[in-house]
Image 1 (cartoon, rainbow, N blue to C red):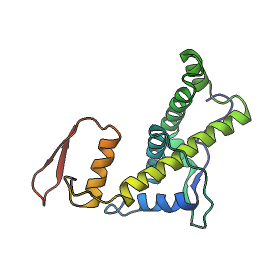
Image 2: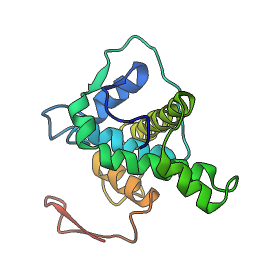
Image 3: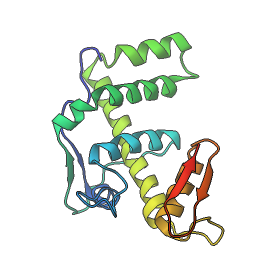
Image 4: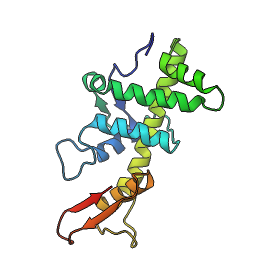
Length: 183
């Protein structure tokens, strides 16, 4: 993006969002983690937060922070820039013409104030997305009507259905085997 560059610095989850992130992403524990890397949670949370229009302010509760290093941010910069551009376009839809929305999104921040505004918007959606993912994947308990008995699988399937993963055909081979998902 133009004069001001996003996603080149470290990002820290702080307060309650750090605690939530630590439960959603567990380093080197493939049995308990929902995300392979913390940056994957950051990307997914941005999309989920925006999709459900959920923002959250930064929290300063006394929990250990979780950091995404600049190298990881830079590797995902293209994807993050694209997500931010979509947020900017859709944020101004209805108040500006479509052409002006596109121009605003792709020209990027032109002033320090605009840069800070876009950065805050993006990170507020990330934190809101972390809260949403935490509620749906960690707090939610499987319903008796769920097709799966274990919370983890039931919550993942409910999340996929909620956020429009398309029509899915879930085929459990039997209760002891891996589940196949056809989309």
